[in-house]
Length: 320
Image (cartoon, rainbow, N blue to C red):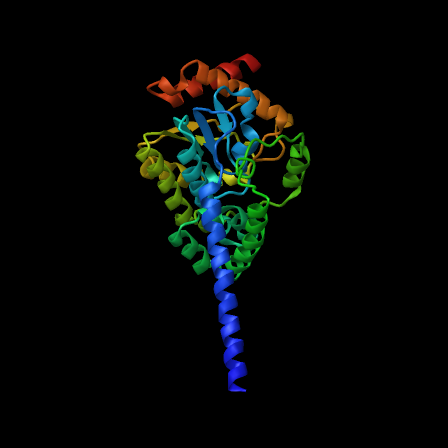
């Protein structure tokens, strides 16, 4: 009986060792063989969440690639940028979406809630460093273990099928013809005014901001120019209610980084998909204009925001 128990334990330990060996070996192989090289070399990329994903139609912008991804925190953007920059020497400028909702406590969920880990870990696990894995495990161990298991299965499939190309998995411009503005505004108009919870609005995700700092530091180390960008949002978007705090953080924490604010670009309701995203009409209008700004030397201006505001004012005057 003792011999049977001993052999069983030995078999279990050996099995665990073999599985662990295969697991970590797969991560190492994928990490080394992964391809983040853009199919067309560009000098400029933009990263961030869904706002730039829907706003910047990179087919209409010269020398520019949209690598933003919906519901993506700076944690995963940092991992992405780290790999993209290491394999794309042509990149000279990184535009980072920095807008009102990215400072909010909600961004913690975008790092480690169950839905996020389930969708991100299978892609990013081979590229996550020890301290980053510890952060996810500490805040949601159950989801991290489940996500790791899912990642193991998908990584083995990628290994056997020799699928090492990640360029199609890390973001890009999203085209949508959706336009829900009128119905959303109608709903808002029928609601009774609620007392604004200032405490909730001003609750920060310090961890998300920490990884924005890391992205900026990484770019500085590689002598890559960084610009913070705010994509257009509808004037009725409630995410803008923390504007005072947003500007305070921007002016103090990121005062040395140029901030390109396009929040006041004049759109029709028909240009929006919803209150915080553009549809294809709005994206085309904005992207062509943004490209024109670049062609006219936006990034070489001493006061870039003054130039942006003056160009927006010209559009507004032409509409009156």
